[in-house]
Amino acid sequence: MTTAAAAPAHDDAPVTRPPGRIRARMLAAIDAAAIEVFARDGYQGATTQAIADVAGLSKAQLHYYIGSKEALYQRVLQDIVDDWIAIFGFADAHHGPRKVLGDYIRRKMLYSFEHPARSRIFAAETMRGAPLLRPLMGTSQRRTSQAAAVITAWIDAGLMRPVDPLLLLFHIWAVTQHYADYEHQIAFFRGRALGDEADRERLIAEVTGFVLRGAGVGEGG
Image (tube, rainbow, N blue to C red; front, side, top):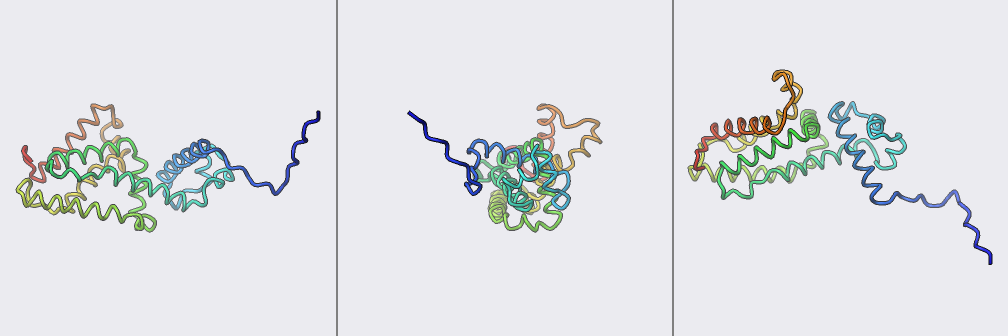
């Protein structure tokens, strides 16, 4: 009995896409490389060749998975915005300003410690006028308005002094993101990089106390 001959290869045969797990692994490597390069060089200075080099790919391989530098950058920005939304968390307003603001500051600072490059990309995009970030900020804008309303309710209830709610949020963002955006400056003046968990906990406690005292949040708040 003879076996059937293998079908001849054709130049116009469809290209087989990599299995899902391989594609997911490659996209994760590309995203990690993109975050490193965009944080280091900015959007304008970044190139797909540099991203490919960091990812360990050829430029042609990179472009098999992404359409363009802008498309990749927008995907990174969307991931960062989704992160900010996930950690905002003012839904538990009934717990009062001490717990809610304290928990929020903790989440923001932990994000700065663990993902400084992402925070720097967000800051750099904002500083150049946010042309690609602005269309992604609708949900963040709504969440911010809701948080400001919660702070106003706490003020009306006498749980904190009459601060400007938006300015309070801006101050929290500025202080907590400072530990990512100015990581190297902090290391220079401290004489050491951000340290172990105990060091981070001390910084979180310092910032939390600073904000809560400034907002007039008492022990029962």
